[in-house]
Length: 263
Ligand code: G4P
Image (cartoon, rainbow, N blue to C red; front, side, top):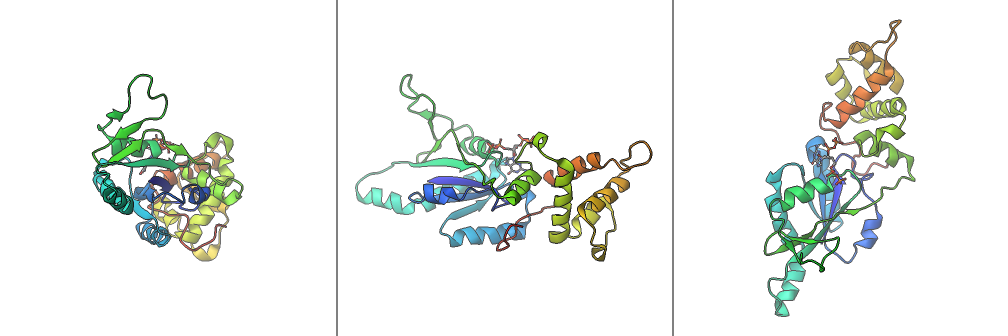
């Protein structure tokens, strides 16, 4: 079984579509992770979308241990056919082997820690037998590979790169923070027109059709972020906007609605 993590806020950009080819002969469970930061309704729509493709889907906050119990049930459900086939061939109690994959920062390690919890009794951990990868026996039914598979995002598409940057999946040192904040603010105006007003009390009216830099200036002014001479400290405002978006302070926001092409 392949357990593929995607970021529920950007279910398109946080996937590498090659996994569909690589994992085509395996059962698939898609975990829509960071669902605590995403729009519930959008997450429901995305879950339906992935189910339609024949995948099993769970939305999740990997940091919380509470959702983990149900994962094993779904793993068993996803591999039901195989378990049944084994049973018919007289093979009993052969555990399902699962591997976690996903792009960097999507929450793979967090998930493995939450899911494996204390059940870290590794199988085959005799000296000389295992070097590197190890199977963690979770219970009598499931074994999990302790090292996640890292998938590379599809950076060739600049919009994908941008969406990964909005959510913090890409290191900020390599980014133009101000430019990025403009584009995030424009996208928010489009998808969640009240989010900025609610957070920053900016009183922006839709008919003003403000550009990203103008929205950022409004925010900087409201927050009193000034440099000498009374000018707005747009760099500080940009860092603040990105931090607050990533921390969920602008609300639960999904940047990629189902059925809408990236733009
Ligand atoms: P990775 O192995 O796929 O690279 O990701 P990792 O588990 O390291 O998780 C990346 C960051 O995402 C971590 O934050 C982790 O706490 C956070 N995270 C994972 N799952 C969830 C989730 O379901 N909801 C939320 N809100 N956060 C989640 P971190 O270590 O604190 O890094 P940073 O936030 O300081 O960048």
